[in-house]
Image (cartoon, rainbow, N blue to C red; front, side, top):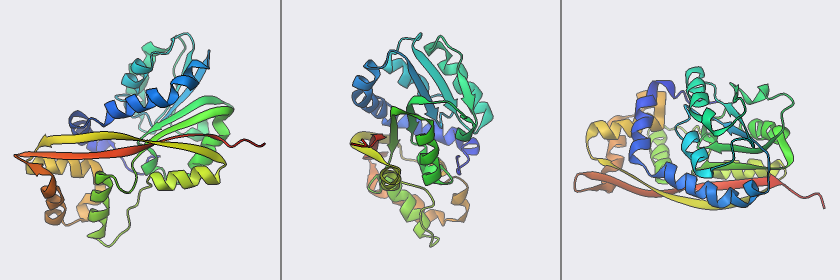
Length: 257
């Protein structure tokens, strides 16, 4: 994790984050979905799987407002400098030392109450294996909480159009894949939607920033004129406006009764 290398496109990702309401929408959804569960836990062991540089993790923890003395944080991120940045950003939310992992397999005997992964599971190498590792690392009464787009999301439509231009399937997982993997691993899943908007000045360079964020190194093989033109239906008075949504999946082990 991840199959997609974010290091070369950090600035493009930052552009997306700055011009989308996705993060705010996801945070509000996690607050709704996890409020009761969090109140039930006087001590919480939380694993943030794919935390990046912490630019989402820190606002999320700020919004959840958990007592620092009760929160035990572990971060998982394979990009070393981003993992370091994330640990620094979230340290103030816990009175305990923030643990860091470059790979989930390093969580040997740890058991987490909550494993959260925000828009990361698209890029794991083996989704079934990853869900299996999460199940192993989860307390029996614990929960998984994921945000991930489904095949109807407009950004996913860009993926489908781009990879179709080079006669390739989309090489990333979507919400439908995650739901199937969770079901096969013995989880019950509650699904909700988090609506958001992507809005930015309509210039070719800004379109390219979004495409570089979406496609990474794959963009080199894709004919750009056709792909850049995918933005045309969303152009309004010099501004690109895309209204779409992501799925939120909260999963727990199925009851054995």
